[in-house]
Image (cartoon, rainbow, N blue to C red):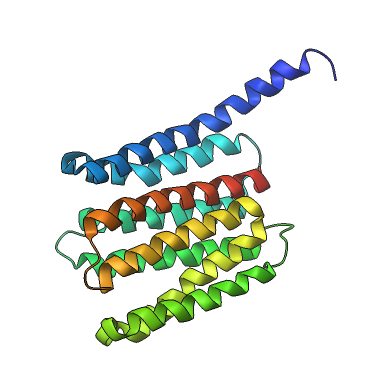
Length: 225
């Protein structure tokens, strides 16, 4: 390789990373605002998270032919954005069901994405642990779910399905699936288990959520660019 090649490579790679750095910065500000109780900052930064991640994906992919997996990725991010801002985008309607619907659709988009991922590996055998997660979650939450028992059980299958399918994309997306599932698990505890502190759980929900989404997006872009 000639001496002129190294600067060219650095120039090409630099813009691919700054979008994810910007997403990470917004995420840190958002989580810190939750932890510090800065309510004036919490919701605006929450609404910025997924647009920042979408920009990061578009910057990181660079030029080249558009792929179907990238469309599914941006669809999952857009649906997550609607879930994040359910109260803002659907005023006057019940927030929680709409939030869960949007995130359920986002998870389905991720599942389709990983099912269609070119040259993907098989689902990892260790993903069977997610079946144990589903059983354990239902065992803990079932007495507190009331009429939502079946809905939560089905929703849990979708969540576990995303995490399991993410193992097809490699170590980065598999780790992203773990963090995304951790976020949903903490959120479920906060919503349905009595005595779980929202002030304590809130920062962890969003910290694991942003890490999970960021790793999923970056891992997919790395494979498809």
